[in-house]
Length: 94
Image (cartoon, rainbow, N blue to C red; front, side):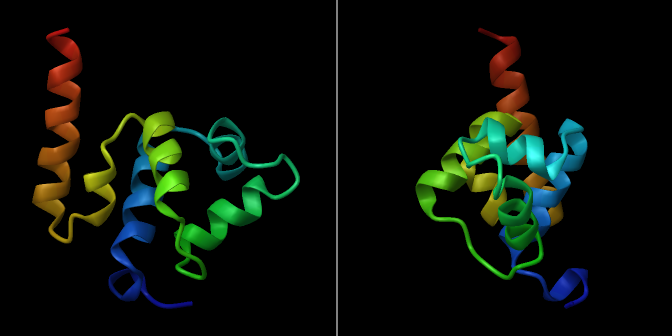
């Protein structure tokens, strides 16, 4: 398995967001509309960079995790944090 810096950025961000949210791979997959029997495997493959989720799947994952899709593609850690914080601050004002 590639080390953390060699993983595609969406893989690292997905795992980070899932861990911050505190949800298992299986439950995240199920909540995002994946079949119960493949949910854990599919999320694991996204997080390890074996497969890349299509845009529709990534949008559903983002919705469950409460982050914008742009978060998954932010190469820079500080930018990723700003994107996540921006989404959080927008929710507080509505």
